Length: 201
Image (cartoon, rainbow, N blue to C red):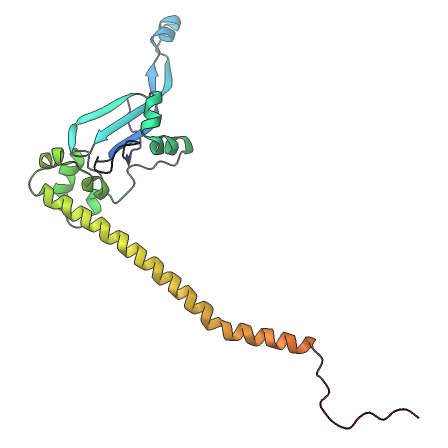
């Protein structure tokens, strides 16, 4: 059975912050209908909605089964992404593109369901030592990298807003001049002081 269900990191609804997020997703997979197959004499498949969940850092923890109503409530973001057809496989920075680690380290991490830097940062203490030597150090670096990236993104946003504000302020004198020119054309000049008009005889 093809179980290529797109996954995303999500913490179970209602779980406290210290509980690590896991990689979860929903998707349609074909499953044979034994009853219909028996009726027609050849295999008949139907698509059913499946739930898949893996714990980053724990290769043995894989859940792939027909989805239940409770799964939708436990992982509402993943379910909403499935319904909207917007889920992309493991959103984040692919672990093999992170320059901090070697290719062999990336392959080892991927074998342990750690596909992104975000997933590495979420690996629970109970699973971190399964990732091999320096795993704790790598997790610390992953957290630091993500925190720095977030700060950089915030700084870039502020810088872009400042540039837009500077451009607006720099353009104000021109706008004021144009407005003044328009107003001059609409208002007739007033007569200055001088001799009074002569009355017609």
